[in-house]
Image (cartoon, rainbow, N blue to C red; front, side, top):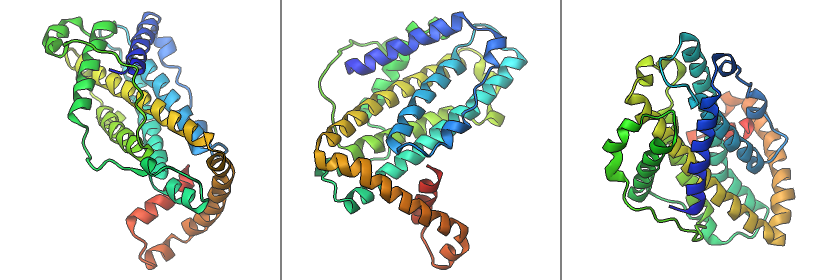
Length: 292
């Protein structure tokens, strides 16, 4: 386990413990609006993604910092509301990743920014690698042992995942395309773990289902955050190149504005797009840019 990932999981469990100790139904029903962040368009995709990852962390901590014991109808209703917010944030993050994996690289070519070929590499496999799955299971095991909201009786069942922990500080820089694809896969797994409000059942809040469920949500969150730290480091390195920095910060912004104007026109003329036989991938890219 990388030291940053290890530290993120420790921090998350401490936050859960602190918030769980302060839990009250009165505070739990205070749910902040997120529309402003989701619809914000006056910042770059990179900065918006940073804010969304921070919001995802905050929402997960708030949603699952529950007090042990039976859940009241009021708390269950608020949990449903929080599930909806979590899914909205994840969907927006996936939209940004789709933009970065496709249109962003195209714009970089138009802006003639110098990017090393390694940043364009994409991972071909759709599923998580075996090593990642093992890391997720091990992180879930650690969360059960550290987070007070989870049932410690399950530790015996998870003991085979204990193994020996090796913490490394070795650099994990990879191609940006690889990282983004990996993140998208993790986000898809996380979204699958968060049922739509109408599908959330109180049965899921009973042990041992609750601990199995939440421990995996927490494990996925820490790996997404860790992956985002690597992505941020790649962007920092890209911007150290003067040519890349000027094009990323100036020309990309200009291109996006031009694309937005064009996309808004095309959005109004969606029927024309269909008449021109625009493929689904192209239409999705158009809509993604507009929504960002």
